Length: 401
Ligand code: GLN
Image 1: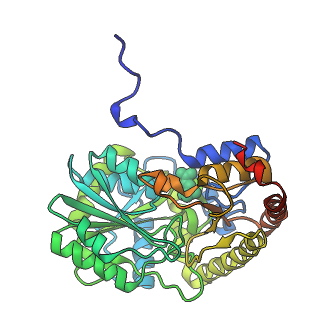
Image 2: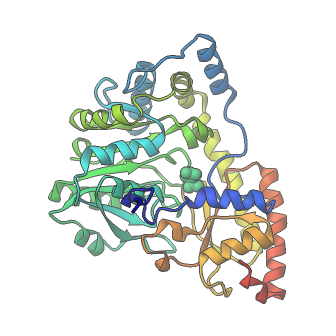
Image 3: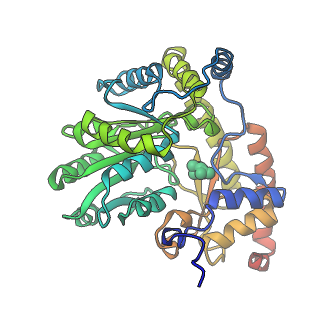
C-alpha cells in the first residue's frame, strides 16, 4: 500500500489562518485587516540602501551568522535601548526573520519529549515549531480583558521536563506588554528549574501610552539563559524582507548557529546590508518615536470605528492589533464571526482561536490589524458601520459561512 504523501508531523497543520484569511479577503473584495502586514511603504532610506547594496554586487552568501555590519548594528541598538552590552562576534546570529530564529532556537534546545511552556493565546507558528522539534507544548492561559496569567498556573507548568518557555512581548494577538513583575516571576521560575527563555520581541518598537518594553534577558540572572528574537519586519514595515536575529549568550549562540547553518545557511545579503543602515540611523533620526506616534493615530482610528459598531474593544498597549469582543452577538465562535465579517461586511479579521491549542477555549473575539494607511482604515470604518446596521436588523444573516 502506498504511504501517505506527508510525514506524521503534518497532521493537524492545515494552512495558516493568515494565508486563509488573505485568500478569502481577495476572493470577496474585502479590506484586509487580517494578516498582519503594513499596506504602506517602508522608509526610503532602507530601500535606497538595498538598491546600493545590489548595485555594489553584494550578491553572494553572507557569513552564515550574518554580516558583521548588521550584527554590530543589532548589538549597538540593543545596548542603547535596553542598557545591556551585546558582543556582536559571539552573541548575535542573523536569521531569516524571527520565524527562522525560533525554529533554529527550538531545534538547538529541545530534545524529543521536552516540554516548552507557551502563553496562550500564542502566535500560531509556536505550536507547529515546538512539535517539529519533538517538543511537547505546555500552554499557560492569559485571561481577557487584560491578559494576565495566574502565577500558580505558571508555576505548576514548570517541572523536570521543562526545557524552555516562550514569552512574546509586546504580544500578538492581545497587545499585552508583559510587566516587570510578570517577567520577574518567569525569570525566577527559569532559574529555579534551569529553563531557557526564548523571547519574541518583534513588536518592541510599537508601544502605546506609558507602556515600556523590558527584554527578559536584561533581568538579573537571565542573560545566560535567554534567547532574544527580533526582526526588522514590523519595525521598518518590510515584513517581506525577512531579516531577523537572535541575541543570546555565547554558549546559546553557538547552539543556535549550529542549527541555523543547516536550516538556511544565511539570509539575503543586500537586505542585511540595508537593515544595518536602517538600524544605524533609526534611534538618532527619531524614527522609532515617529513609528510609535503614527501607530497611535492608526490605533485610535480603528478603535473608534470598532466601537461605533457596538463592539467593545480590548486594551492594546503594544503591537499593531486590536481585539474586538463579539460575545453576545449570537455567533457560535470566532471563526463564524470572521467568516461573516469577510463575506458580508467586507472586512477581513483573524479569529484568535488559531492561537489556541484547543480552539474551543477561545473567547469570541476578532483580531483587526491597523498597520494600514489611514485611507484603508477609513474605508474599513465605513464598511464596519454597515456591520452595526446588520447587527441591529438582520441577526439571522449570521448563519452565513
Ligand atoms: N505575524 C503576522 C500576523 O500575526 C502574519 C505572519 C504570517 O502571515 N505568517 O498576522
